[in-house]
Length: 201
Image 1 (cartoon, helix red, strand yellow):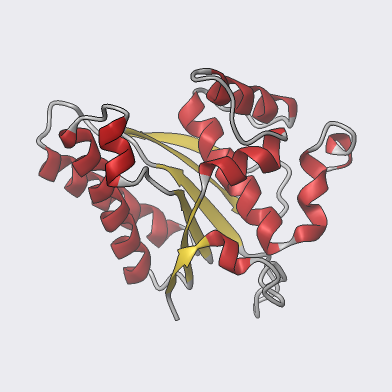
Image 2: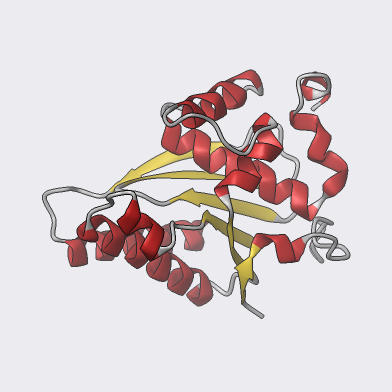
């Protein structure tokens, strides 16, 4: 059964991070939604999850960019048996307007959420959930807020320290969400992203 909601609701779910009926570890994919969308995926607890960037051509209209994203999602979900799909929750519309986000940008980001959830449901993914970026950053870096511009670089440095080869901050943000989701599914591995324990991964 496909469900949606906030990732925090997964905390403590019995067996959510345990092997599936086929004996494999659950596969988690995380998205940092943007015109250049960061993607990170791997089984719960993987030392080296895969990262990539999906670019949505700026030359296309918004509807065609969303269609292109839909095609990428369908192709990915056909090639990978995903158990949990997570994405960074977008800013509330009122907050986005307050910080000066353009209406076109807000429409695109909200549209990407809808397309992603729809494609996930079509692929029968049982857990489709958003996460608060501050919660994910606190998990990976130990802080919830930093001066503007510093947060993404701190996340990127943390990913690099853990041996995740991110080419840009879209990918490192996606990794941050993936790591947070894995830790919520299996709290026993949450400490492994800290410097003291990272070499034990």
